[in-house]
Image (cartoon, rainbow, N blue to C red; front, side, top):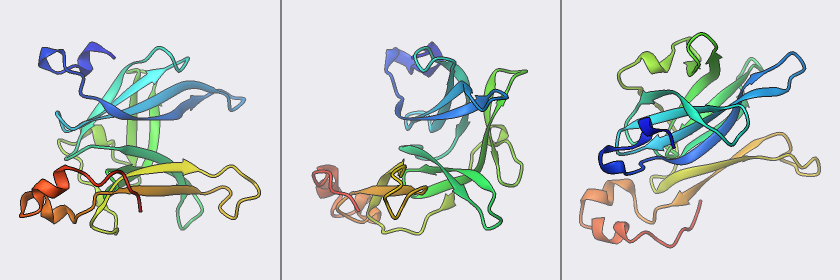
Length: 184
């Protein structure tokens, strides 16, 4: 892990990697890979870059509240334009595109309105309408031509067991023990 991603005392505070192609050549072959890592301790999403999926280096970051379980998938908007959907902790999302900037060797996420979110002091996420005990979505792409979901990205959320509002209330102790890893 690059030194810039270590907290004081050497604690590694990065998890939930999401890997995606960020640059392709004229033959549509991936020449640069990107990775997101979430850091709840710093309220940041870090971006890394690699040419070989083995060696990684720092490539940017952005700030947002509770940046856990970043999930990346492709979706088509109402105009049939393919966009990148970045879901954070099942409850917030951004729509746009990852772009590699050769001049700075950085990865940027440009939202659907053309804003480079790394230039914002705190990125406000769009909110997902989901069950209040939905937590930490895992997404995957269906590449099985025999599936009725072929060509679609599917998201499933871990089930926290109690509504998020209970975290600070009477049931906070129950919620802190988790529920054994069920999902919605």
